[in-house]
Length: 279
Image (cartoon, rainbow, N blue to C red):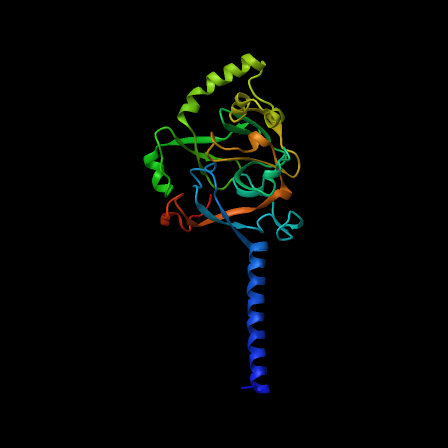
């Protein structure tokens, strides 16, 4: 049966309203993802114990700068990153590797522009002051780190950064800690120095030198608009000690909270981590 004009008009109006609703829903999703928050998944263990593999985060896109969505073009500044912030950024890719273009990393901001930093024994020294690390027993720390499974070889430290409002946890490895004096002495025999220049660490292909760089980096000053980052899994993190500074233009935002956490390779969730604020 042929449709009457009234029926056709009603159908057109109905579909037009549907299209409008879908358009505004997509626009809202793109606006939120582009300017407000963006989900991010933790793919590696470099931020253990603060973040675990399988954590899914919300990242504030407007913490530092407002920019064009899905690009590194910044429109205006909101605020400066602080020491202690857990930040998501585009990998700096100083080596110009095609397979590393567009990869997101997440680390903790240790140094801000103008800071003079040295790394000794894996501990950063900021403007001549060593970062404080207080060792904690696994029994005392575990209730404060839901989902984290400590091991005897992974001592935990509560770290305090100058200028940061919050303390945070770092994980070290006992075997590496015990070898540090020997490694430092061997490096000095070979090079005549007791630390590795940051630029040398970035270009070195020598695995021994790269290991030294993780724990003994000579004093450097952070340039304007650059940031120095490290992982909380201090002895097992590819970070600024290996590839230098992060330019402000590469920063995507500050990690806010865990909205869901999935156990890797298992269909199980860590409900105790849902809603956990990231310090």
